[in-house]
Length: 556
Image 1 (cartoon, one colour):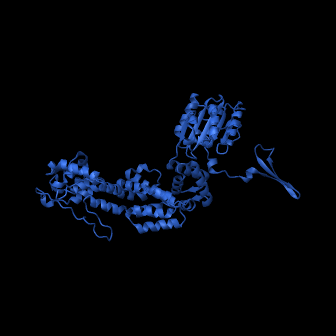
Image 2 (cartoon, one colour; image 1 turned 135 degrees about the vertical axis):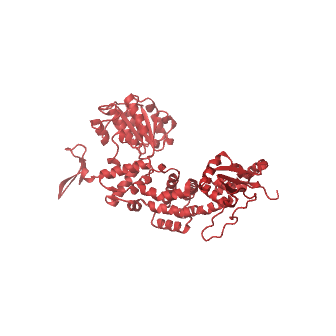
Image 3 (tube, helix red, strand yellow; image 1 turned 120 degrees about the vertical axis):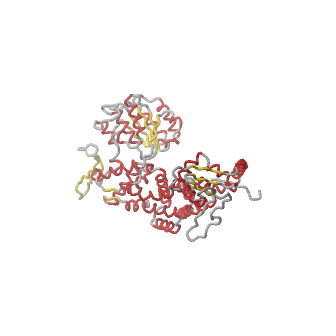
């Protein structure tokens, strides 16, 4: 016979007695059966100061406690595992502490200890997902008729409140609007939009925000150091990214990896357990896609899929790597979650591609998400998405050709039609430096990465250097390009590029000459007509370019 009871010699310690014929009576303490407490519980914050990433919420509650302006009902909303229930318990401690109400409970008095252990009879925690009906709400209201047994407040914490039925919500209205002075309501939900407006209007609403990857990574490294096991920086960063802003999710993953890796968690352990591709794999895959190395990219994808990695996770990790590259290209400080080794690995690619190219590559990658989400064969959808991104170098060549520049052909491919040097109809360069006239594409190349529109305009002109003076002479049909090159917006970048290309110039002055000033209105009309053309608009949508110049037909 097995009998379960409470050990009379130790309060709250559950014990099991085995009795029967031929069996010696044995007592096994419950604490021996469950000797390990998961990190999410053992590292639950016990002070407001330990609540990660919720400074606004903490300041609001502490100021209300200090000023004696505590509300009678609060609604905590936000992502799972960011501290909503923990904050509710801390608030219960603060109002019932022997030193309270206080902005920082002592954690040592009987009330604080009982709330920490979940044994306080004046703090009621209800799971609304289980107690959804109006009958449970009525039982609770009956309990609230009586004053607290010992503490100042009877605190009612309703978790996942959005799961209550409509009738249960209606039964709560009066109790929330005018509760007894000794009752404090705290509601927690991950889906605030499902809570009726009549409930929201009766509560003070506090939003708990997802935590940043850098904050979670630092917290994981601190826990690893305190618990005495090794955690590599790359593994910590990967776990933080997989947690998607949830501290509890991150600690649960860390627990799982700790059991797998036996005290030493590295990148290989994370890859094996979580199914997340390593940073080296995703960065190499993005490099191959950006360079148009289709065979290499597909081979890497097939290897990762064959290893059992989820196509959706691969898609997310490639997008995360593209985002990190964009941040590094714009400003390195925007991506603090990268380790130093990861930063050094991505920096050359970020500098080579530049912000404009990375912005469009990331946008193209995000456009493939509905295809992966809605299709049954996600592996095939991921390969199609990768193939589309791998066409990026070809798109760049087409854009260069459409802009009138020299389109570099693909390896082993014939030259792109029309990619020869542009023809210039204007008169030859004047002055002593006529023999030293520079090729326009040299100056355009210096402008292309940061100012593609200006580069396309310059490429349509003849360039001559006469001492410190650089002269751009445009043909009659390129009046629009001439006006843009002469504008205040273009003058600064143009002068800087001239200094870099024509070394030795002490003072640079740019003169733009054109014989087409009288055709300005006509060109503007042609430009407006081109913008209205459906075919041109479709090309702009697909390629993502812009109209930099127009010219009339020869017979017009």
